Amino acid sequence: MDFESRRLHLLISVVAIIALSFTAEKCRELVGEEGSSQSGKFTILNCFDMGSGTVACAVKEGVKLYFYNIRSSHAERARSQAIESALVDAVTQGMSPTDSAKHAQKEGKKAAKLASRQAKRIIGPIISSGWDFFEAIYYGGTVTEGFLRGTGTLFGTYAGGFLGEQRLGRIGYLLGSHLGSWVGGRIGLMVYDVVNGVHLLLQFVQTGEIEVHEKSKRSESSSFFGETPVYDSSEGSGVYESPPSEESYAYESTERQSYETYEDSEL
Image (cartoon, rainbow, N blue to C red; front, side, top):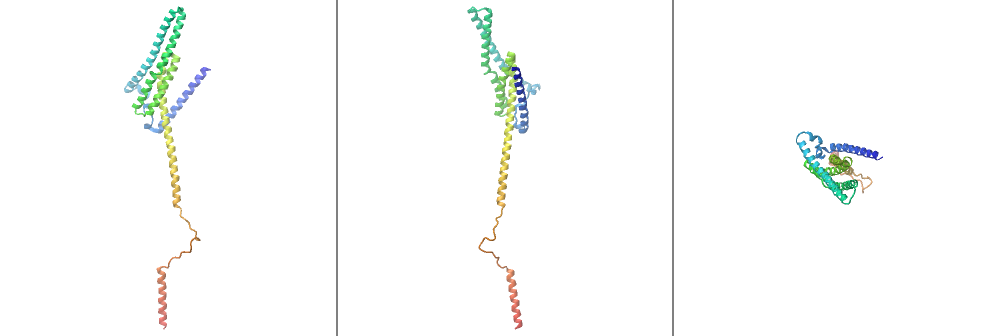
Protein backbone atom coordinates (compact mmCIF):
# COMPACT_ATOMS: atom_id res chain seq x y z
CA MET A 1 0.00 0.00 0.00
CA ASP A 2 2.89 2.34 0.82
CA PHE A 3 4.47 1.62 -2.56
CA GLU A 4 1.21 2.41 -4.36
CA SER A 5 0.83 5.72 -2.51
CA ARG A 6 4.39 6.69 -3.43
CA ARG A 7 3.75 5.92 -7.06
CA LEU A 8 0.57 7.99 -6.93
CA HIS A 9 2.41 10.93 -5.33
CA LEU A 10 5.14 10.70 -7.94
CA LEU A 11 2.60 10.63 -10.77
CA ILE A 12 0.75 13.63 -9.36
CA SER A 13 4.02 15.55 -9.00
CA VAL A 14 5.06 14.81 -12.59
CA VAL A 15 1.66 15.85 -13.96
CA ALA A 16 1.71 19.05 -11.89
CA ILE A 17 5.21 19.97 -13.13
CA ILE A 18 4.22 19.31 -16.76
CA ALA A 19 1.07 21.44 -16.38
CA LEU A 20 3.08 24.22 -14.74
CA SER A 21 5.67 24.07 -17.52
CA PHE A 22 2.98 24.32 -20.23
CA THR A 23 1.27 27.23 -18.46
CA ALA A 24 4.59 29.03 -17.98
CA GLU A 25 5.42 28.64 -21.68
CA LYS A 26 2.09 30.20 -22.69
CA CYS A 27 2.62 33.03 -20.20
CA ARG A 28 6.09 33.67 -21.64
CA GLU A 29 4.57 33.97 -25.10
CA LEU A 30 1.97 36.36 -23.71
CA VAL A 31 4.32 38.76 -21.93
CA GLY A 32 7.07 38.60 -24.58
CA GLU A 33 10.85 38.31 -24.37
CA GLU A 34 11.46 41.32 -22.16
CA GLY A 35 8.78 40.51 -19.59
CA SER A 36 9.63 36.82 -19.19
CA SER A 37 12.33 35.31 -16.99
CA GLN A 38 15.83 36.18 -18.20
CA SER A 39 17.96 33.62 -16.38
CA GLY A 40 15.79 30.78 -17.68
CA LYS A 41 17.20 31.30 -21.17
CA PHE A 42 20.43 29.68 -20.02
CA THR A 43 19.47 26.01 -20.24
CA ILE A 44 21.41 22.81 -19.69
CA LEU A 45 22.16 22.68 -23.43
CA ASN A 46 24.36 25.76 -23.04
CA CYS A 47 26.65 23.70 -20.84
CA PHE A 48 27.75 21.71 -23.90
CA ASP A 49 28.67 24.58 -26.22
CA MET A 50 32.40 23.99 -25.47
CA GLY A 51 32.78 27.67 -24.70
CA SER A 52 31.76 30.15 -22.02
CA GLY A 53 28.63 28.14 -21.25
CA THR A 54 30.68 25.05 -20.43
CA VAL A 55 33.01 27.06 -18.19
CA ALA A 56 30.11 28.71 -16.37
CA CYS A 57 28.37 25.39 -15.76
CA ALA A 58 31.59 23.74 -14.57
CA VAL A 59 32.29 26.51 -12.05
CA LYS A 60 28.71 26.66 -10.82
CA GLU A 61 28.21 22.92 -10.40
CA GLY A 62 31.71 22.53 -8.98
CA VAL A 63 30.98 25.04 -6.23
CA LYS A 64 27.69 23.35 -5.42
CA LEU A 65 29.25 19.91 -5.40
CA TYR A 66 32.04 21.15 -3.14
CA PHE A 67 29.63 22.46 -0.52
CA TYR A 68 27.42 19.37 -0.75
CA ASN A 69 30.53 17.26 -0.23
CA ILE A 70 31.52 19.34 2.79
CA ARG A 71 28.19 18.54 4.40
CA SER A 72 28.52 14.84 3.64
CA SER A 73 32.13 14.73 4.85
CA HIS A 74 31.14 16.51 8.04
CA ALA A 75 28.52 13.85 8.76
CA GLU A 76 30.96 11.02 8.05
CA ARG A 77 33.60 12.58 10.29
CA ALA A 78 31.12 12.93 13.14
CA ARG A 79 30.03 9.32 12.66
CA SER A 80 33.61 7.99 12.79
CA GLN A 81 34.42 9.97 15.90
CA ALA A 82 31.25 8.76 17.60
CA ILE A 83 32.05 5.12 16.75
CA GLU A 84 35.58 5.41 18.16
CA SER A 85 34.31 7.04 21.31
CA ALA A 86 31.58 4.42 21.74
CA LEU A 87 34.08 1.55 21.29
CA VAL A 88 36.37 3.00 23.94
CA ASP A 89 33.44 3.35 26.33
CA ALA A 90 32.27 -0.20 25.62
CA VAL A 91 35.74 -1.64 26.30
CA THR A 92 36.07 0.25 29.59
CA GLN A 93 32.64 -1.03 30.64
CA GLY A 94 33.67 -4.63 29.89
CA MET A 95 31.12 -5.28 27.14
CA SER A 96 31.54 -8.16 24.70
CA PRO A 97 32.93 -7.41 21.21
CA THR A 98 29.54 -8.03 19.59
CA ASP A 99 27.72 -5.74 21.98
CA SER A 100 30.48 -3.16 21.67
CA ALA A 101 30.16 -3.14 17.87
CA LYS A 102 26.37 -2.78 18.03
CA HIS A 103 26.65 0.01 20.57
CA ALA A 104 29.28 1.79 18.49
CA GLN A 105 27.23 1.54 15.30
CA LYS A 106 24.19 2.87 17.08
CA GLU A 107 26.06 5.85 18.52
CA GLY A 108 27.74 6.53 15.19
CA LYS A 109 24.41 6.57 13.40
CA LYS A 110 23.00 9.03 15.91
CA ALA A 111 26.00 11.34 15.61
CA ALA A 112 25.95 11.25 11.80
CA LYS A 113 22.24 12.01 11.73
CA LEU A 114 22.67 14.97 14.08
CA ALA A 115 25.65 16.36 12.16
CA SER A 116 23.88 15.89 8.85
CA ARG A 117 20.82 17.69 10.12
CA GLN A 118 22.86 20.62 11.37
CA ALA A 119 24.94 20.97 8.20
CA LYS A 120 21.95 20.42 5.92
CA ARG A 121 20.29 23.60 7.16
CA ILE A 122 23.37 25.77 6.74
CA ILE A 123 25.82 24.93 4.02
CA GLY A 124 24.75 23.39 0.73
CA PRO A 125 21.17 24.58 0.11
CA ILE A 126 21.82 28.14 1.22
CA ILE A 127 24.94 28.47 -0.95
CA SER A 128 23.08 26.98 -3.92
CA SER A 129 20.08 29.26 -3.38
CA GLY A 130 22.24 32.38 -3.10
CA TRP A 131 24.16 31.44 -6.23
CA ASP A 132 20.97 31.10 -8.29
CA PHE A 133 19.62 34.38 -6.89
CA PHE A 134 22.66 36.39 -8.00
CA GLU A 135 22.80 34.50 -11.29
CA ALA A 136 19.25 35.64 -12.08
CA ILE A 137 20.19 39.25 -11.28
CA TYR A 138 23.34 38.96 -13.40
CA TYR A 139 21.37 37.83 -16.46
CA GLY A 140 19.15 40.91 -16.23
CA GLY A 141 16.28 39.46 -14.23
CA THR A 142 14.33 41.28 -11.55
CA VAL A 143 14.68 40.84 -7.81
CA THR A 144 11.39 38.91 -7.80
CA GLU A 145 12.76 36.49 -10.38
CA GLY A 146 15.91 35.98 -8.34
CA PHE A 147 13.92 35.47 -5.16
CA LEU A 148 11.56 32.89 -6.68
CA ARG A 149 14.40 31.03 -8.37
CA GLY A 150 16.47 31.03 -5.18
CA THR A 151 13.51 29.83 -3.12
CA GLY A 152 12.80 27.02 -5.56
CA THR A 153 16.46 26.02 -5.50
CA LEU A 154 16.49 26.01 -1.69
CA PHE A 155 13.47 23.73 -1.31
CA GLY A 156 14.52 21.57 -4.25
CA THR A 157 17.96 21.00 -2.73
CA TYR A 158 16.47 20.06 0.63
CA ALA A 159 13.94 17.66 -0.88
CA GLY A 160 16.32 16.09 -3.39
CA GLY A 161 19.07 15.60 -0.83
CA PHE A 162 16.70 14.09 1.72
CA LEU A 163 15.13 11.62 -0.71
CA GLY A 164 18.47 10.70 -2.27
CA GLU A 165 20.09 10.05 1.09
CA GLN A 166 17.26 7.77 2.12
CA ARG A 167 17.68 5.66 -1.01
CA LEU A 168 21.42 5.64 -1.78
CA GLY A 169 23.18 7.15 1.21
CA ARG A 170 25.98 9.64 0.61
CA ILE A 171 26.02 9.25 -3.17
CA GLY A 172 22.25 9.61 -3.21
CA TYR A 173 22.49 12.83 -1.25
CA LEU A 174 24.97 14.33 -3.71
CA LEU A 175 22.94 13.31 -6.76
CA GLY A 176 19.61 14.25 -5.18
CA SER A 177 20.85 17.66 -4.07
CA HIS A 178 22.18 18.42 -7.53
CA LEU A 179 19.03 17.30 -9.33
CA GLY A 180 16.72 18.88 -6.76
CA SER A 181 18.58 22.17 -7.03
CA TRP A 182 18.12 22.30 -10.80
CA VAL A 183 14.46 21.20 -10.74
CA GLY A 184 13.60 23.59 -7.90
CA GLY A 185 15.20 26.54 -9.69
CA ARG A 186 13.27 25.76 -12.89
CA ILE A 187 10.01 25.51 -10.96
CA GLY A 188 10.73 28.91 -9.40
CA LEU A 189 11.21 30.44 -12.86
CA MET A 190 7.97 28.83 -14.07
CA VAL A 191 6.11 30.34 -11.13
CA TYR A 192 7.61 33.74 -11.97
CA ASP A 193 6.43 33.53 -15.59
CA VAL A 194 2.95 32.41 -14.55
CA VAL A 195 2.66 35.29 -12.07
CA ASN A 196 3.73 37.75 -14.79
CA GLY A 197 1.17 36.33 -17.23
CA VAL A 198 -1.67 36.48 -14.71
CA HIS A 199 -0.71 40.05 -13.78
CA LEU A 200 -0.78 41.08 -17.45
CA LEU A 201 -4.18 39.45 -17.97
CA LEU A 202 -5.58 41.30 -14.96
CA GLN A 203 -4.26 44.56 -16.40
CA PHE A 204 -5.99 43.80 -19.72
CA VAL A 205 -9.27 43.11 -17.93
CA GLN A 206 -9.06 46.29 -15.85
CA THR A 207 -8.14 48.39 -18.91
CA GLY A 208 -11.08 46.95 -20.85
CA GLU A 209 -13.48 47.72 -18.01
CA ILE A 210 -12.20 51.31 -17.79
CA GLU A 211 -12.59 51.83 -21.56
CA VAL A 212 -16.14 50.46 -21.52
CA HIS A 213 -17.01 52.71 -18.58
CA GLU A 214 -15.59 55.79 -20.34
CA LYS A 215 -17.45 54.97 -23.57
CA SER A 216 -20.74 54.62 -21.70
CA LYS A 217 -20.13 57.97 -20.02
CA ARG A 218 -19.39 59.60 -23.38
CA SER A 219 -22.54 58.20 -24.96
CA GLU A 220 -24.67 59.37 -22.04
CA SER A 221 -23.21 62.90 -22.18
CA SER A 222 -23.62 63.15 -25.97
CA SER A 223 -27.24 62.02 -25.81
CA PHE A 224 -27.92 64.58 -23.05
CA PHE A 225 -26.47 67.52 -24.98
CA GLY A 226 -28.03 66.41 -28.29
CA GLU A 227 -31.63 66.68 -27.03
CA THR A 228 -33.64 69.84 -28.05
CA PRO A 229 -36.32 71.15 -25.71
CA VAL A 230 -39.91 70.92 -27.00
CA TYR A 231 -42.28 73.69 -25.97
CA ASP A 232 -46.02 73.40 -25.92
CA SER A 233 -47.85 75.87 -28.14
CA SER A 234 -50.47 76.38 -25.46
CA GLU A 235 -47.92 77.77 -23.04
CA GLY A 236 -47.14 81.49 -23.04
CA SER A 237 -49.18 84.66 -22.71
CA GLY A 238 -50.07 85.03 -26.38
CA VAL A 239 -49.27 84.25 -29.96
CA TYR A 240 -46.22 85.96 -31.28
CA GLU A 241 -46.81 87.90 -34.53
CA SER A 242 -43.98 88.96 -36.73
CA PRO A 243 -43.79 92.71 -37.62
CA PRO A 244 -44.82 93.72 -41.14
CA SER A 245 -42.04 93.64 -43.65
CA GLU A 246 -40.84 96.47 -45.94
CA GLU A 247 -42.46 94.85 -48.99
CA SER A 248 -45.91 95.14 -47.44
CA TYR A 249 -45.32 98.85 -46.73
CA ALA A 250 -44.25 99.49 -50.34
CA TYR A 251 -47.28 97.66 -51.72
CA GLU A 252 -49.72 99.69 -49.59
CA SER A 253 -48.11 103.04 -50.58
CA THR A 254 -48.31 102.12 -54.31
CA GLU A 255 -52.02 101.34 -54.04
CA ARG A 256 -52.68 104.60 -52.21
CA GLN A 257 -50.88 106.68 -54.90
CA SER A 258 -52.72 104.99 -57.76
CA TYR A 259 -56.06 105.62 -56.03
CA GLU A 260 -55.33 109.33 -55.55
CA THR A 261 -54.28 109.68 -59.20
CA TYR A 262 -57.55 108.11 -60.33
CA GLU A 263 -59.64 110.55 -58.24
CA ASP A 264 -57.75 113.58 -59.64
CA SER A 265 -58.36 112.48 -63.21
CA GLU A 266 -62.12 112.27 -62.63
CA LEU A 267 -62.25 115.71 -61.16
